[in-house]
Image (cartoon, rainbow, N blue to C red; front, side):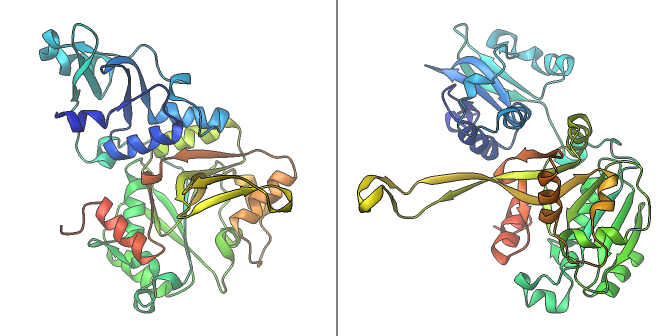
Amino acid sequence: MNTEQLMTFMISPDSTVVEAMEHIDRNARGILFVVEGNKRLVGVVTDGDIRRWLIKSGDLNGHVGRFMNHSPRLIYRKDVRQAQQYMTRYSITALPVVSAKGCITDIIFKERGDDVEARATDGLRDIPVVIMAGGKGTRLYPYTKILPKPLIPIGDIPIMERIIDRFRAYGAHDFWVTVNYKKGMIKSYFAEAEHEYDIQYVEEDKPLGTAGSLCLIENEFDRPFIVTNCDILIDADYEDLYRYHVQSGNELTIVTALKNIVVPYGVIHSSENGAVMSMEEKPRLSYFVNTGMYILNPGLLDEIPKDTFFHMTDLSDALLKQGRKVGMYPISEDSFLDMGEFEEMHRMETKLNLKAE
């Protein structure tokens, strides 16, 4: 590994959470090694550490040194031939190689296949998954004049089939799909496709928003269920997400993604009477945004009004006003892919390495 590549896996303990998430997006390995001075190893941070910190504190400006693991696994250069055996023994996927002075000289990774296949489990077996696929997809017109949004291909596979494949990697088998616009095309495609899972269709007679059609589901779910929009791909451990929802005691969990927005101007901070207090050049604002994936307790189906246009934000607002528990599961900016607009659709293809260079 050359020096430039090595640097994408290193971060200072004084770096912020936002900076750490950006580093992890760049290296696409979910891990950073915390160094001081001349690459001297002092800790390690994973995407899971960052998530736990954000759930606990919500502080995007917190320093990495406050939540890093101070006892990282490592191997000395003289022992590097034993690296793969060492990683297998301790179930780790990345191992820093250090000099006698404790400075990182290389990083060894455990070989992996496709990300989704590599972490395949059956942890979501018997967990219902609802895909909201009734919208017209007006932002993707004229594509959606011909095809319903769930069937627009990303590469050579429709977006909804890619979503299902990701859940299938975690053992999910039972899918409910809410349909309205061009519903016949959606049904025909999946009727003709070979698959080893069950799809039940929930038909809207009129648009009911991002949550309203849930009241049309006739089944009585006996456990928390997952809801996802039909135009997003979430790169996360779905089993860990579901486990977090159950263990946290949330009634509703919202999967959120970091979003960084750079204001392309100098921003003026003023006081009364137009007095300028300071000027900030092109500030960057960081927020968590709603990705369109949720986990709901089954009792929440009774909270959704029948035959009424009702968004998921209406449900979360109602729960919060009643003092009930709504939580978030944060992921990095690059772990959220949204096909809702042409630019984002092309970004999704690029991220999945489906576009010719």
